[in-house]
Amino acid sequence: MATYKYQGRNSKGEAVNGQLVVASQNAAANELARQGITPIRIVEEAEKAGKELSINFDIFPKKVTLDELIIFCRQMNALARAGIPIIRAMKGLAESTRSEKLKETLMDVASRLESGTNLASSMQAHPKVFSELFISMIHVGENTGQLEEAFHQLSENLELERDTRKRVKQATRYPTMVLSAIFIALFIVNIFVIPKFASVFKKFGADLPLPTQILVATSNFCLEYWWLMIGLVIAAIFSFRYWVRTEKGKYEWDRRKLNFPIVGILFEQITLSRFTRNFAMMLKAGMPITHALAIAAEAAGNHYIASRIVEMKNSIERGDSLLRSARSTEVFTPLVL
Image (cartoon, rainbow, N blue to C red; front, top):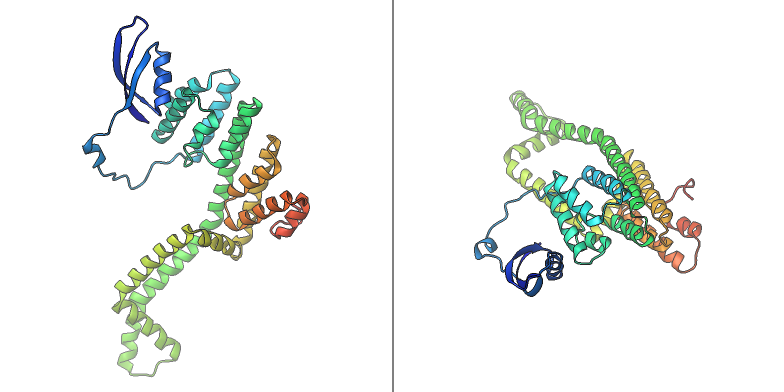
């Protein structure tokens, strides 16, 4: 959103001027025309110098949660079925929502709609709020005249996605707690317990077995170089996070997650479940199979399996059947095949 200064004439021919906060110059012209003002000059107002130099201390950027998107889809479905114009519905939901981020997004979408942009393209300007899957379903709904059905399917899909995420958290909570407890126990033993035993053994002057000598040496190292250990742990965490953000790192990490004991098979089943659910929804909406595969791959949540789904799409484009291309990826279970 930007501020535009305008000069024009009203229906009586009188000179008028003022400011508008809209998404673009075209949106400003449309808004003036709606108000019965003929624009003569529309210029974007420059930001103040002090505002340009301001520092943003927002460490935790605002996000639109999955629950907020579900409620938004339900409300849009109800309003569209009731025949409420899309722009009016968007502005009404923007005023009623408690999420500042969603409010800003919906107001911007409404402004873009007023400037003549379609709904899918308006939402595409906010990729952090609306995913590619979301936008594609809206695009299909607009083209087929079934926008309310698109919002209904999206609300159901997002509810299933919310349930899936809850199951992932429940499945990983116990292993995470066990590993955390092990690390805490090792820390306490190395810092407090072993040094006490080491001083007792030293008084006796007895020869210690090799495993005990290794434990004592490890404890002494931790006590002497605790600052180095903390630094290495922090460096390892940041290095891992940087590596996972790279394309190669995402691919390798997602591939290795599928081989984890106990939870690996769960990650695979959840990813395949998400893929088949999204794929079915897009096919039901009438989307071409190759386009649906490309979007379902992006929304799968696992880059390794996503790459295999893209291979499926390429194989189908070369003339193979869905079954043969799916079997060649070696990621689908016999039941899915």
